[in-house]
Image 1 (spheres, rainbow, N blue to C red):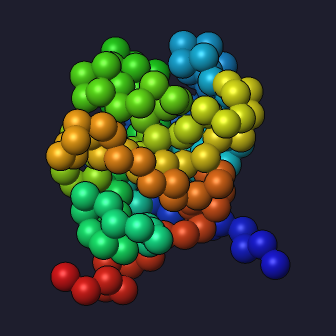
Image 2: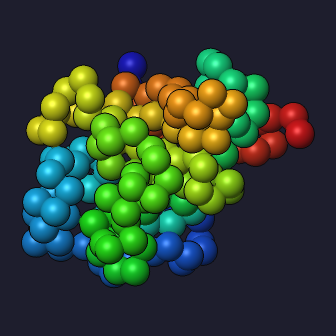
Length: 170
């Protein structure tokens, strides 16, 4: 049985990295700028709060990340527009070029490492109009090749998977 995400309680109370309330026009412009159709659940989340820090900040993984052997911490999910939106001058396209993330989609989030790791929507298997997977990317690796971990098969599954930091040992 599928659990619905409570978008209202998904973000914490901090307004860091939160943009202005989104409109349909902002969504259309962002999709045009990025060249990708954004997941419906991502847009629904941003209609509640246009980016910010998750209330539950850890996402469990089946393989190690640069963060931990069994999870990744997500510091923020980027919104649309404003200063830090995915479609802005310092947004996804800039981050992909600056940090060398694989050019497979859209950077939508950061870990506390603030640069060498990112959370991305991966359109490499579904095309620019499809439903992307959510991946973790670490570009600071010994062999210089990005380490990619699939976190979820879609954004809604990603939203449902978050856990409290307290569920993971230090």
